[in-house]
Amino acid sequence: MTFLQTVVQLHHTPYLKLLGKGSSQFLPLTSGKNYWTLGRSEDNNFVLKDQWASRNHAMLQRMEHGEFFLIDLGSRNGSFINGRRLTIPVILKDRDLILLGQTEFEFHSPVLTDIDPNPSGEDQDSESDFTATLTVRRLISVLVVDIRDFTVLTRRLDERILSEVIGRWFRHAGEIIRDHGSWVDKYIGDAIMAVWFHGTQGVSPQEMLRICQALHEMYRMTMELSDAYPLPFPLRVGAGLNTGYAMVGNTGSGGTADYTALGDTVNAAFRLESSTKQLGVDVALGEATYKYLSRLKPEKNFDQYRVNLKGYDIPTLTYTTTFESLKIFLEKTSE
Image 1 (tube, rainbow, N blue to C red):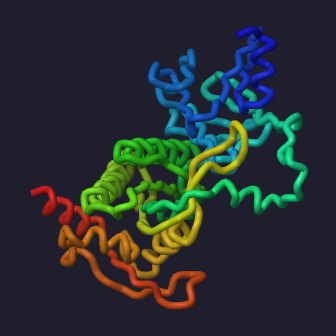
Image 2: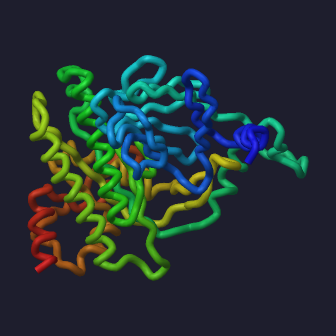
């Protein structure tokens, strides 16, 4: 491909431009993927030839509306946007300067001004355009995991240590979720959301068990990470898991399209996670999630509550547990 062809292609594609004396290297963030890793290790999508970069330094995650998050993966020397060190995932803006070790990039997210978004000439508002892309109704399970007391942690912990701890947590959480058949669909400050897609015949107990195993591994990883750093208090997480139907599909346009889910099933998962704080538990399951799991007889390890979820008119039936009880349940099912 010639340089001119590359420039034309990049006009339609978000990309990173490698900066430096005499450099003209472009790293396209092409469609078909929703995350890219950067670091010294050869297994990264973009390998950094930089002794100041960590083996797994940072990750770019594209979200459903086309925005990009930069996530530091617990790098030793940190990741910086416009001179400011990251402590949580941050949304990139066009022409933001990114510094990883001593390697500097400029982020570009071009506007496709030469493509008519409505060639038919019919009047269409942005809301109808967006919802029209979400055309498939799918049975899904949504897992939301949140780091507890994160605001307090940011006030009491050195910025460099905070960045390393949270970066490593995001990296390991993403690895665990991918190992169990999903991916991180959203980063929301101090929380992540993952989606599992199920078949039309419902959800087998084994599928739900796999999600619970992923959650338990995330808890265990959190405890190990907490023990490895001089934190003012132990790192803790809470989780909400909900199963139901949602509209899913590619949102955004052109090279920024991404596969995601929207609807009440997703919203309820976030509300269930929030309810764990008021109930004093670690995990809250939606009624349908528990129904699919119930064939494995988890009764002794889960408690039933009716909780008032924000935005819901009537109390919602939920099943809760602690991470210790979840561990016991998983051990019994593996016997």
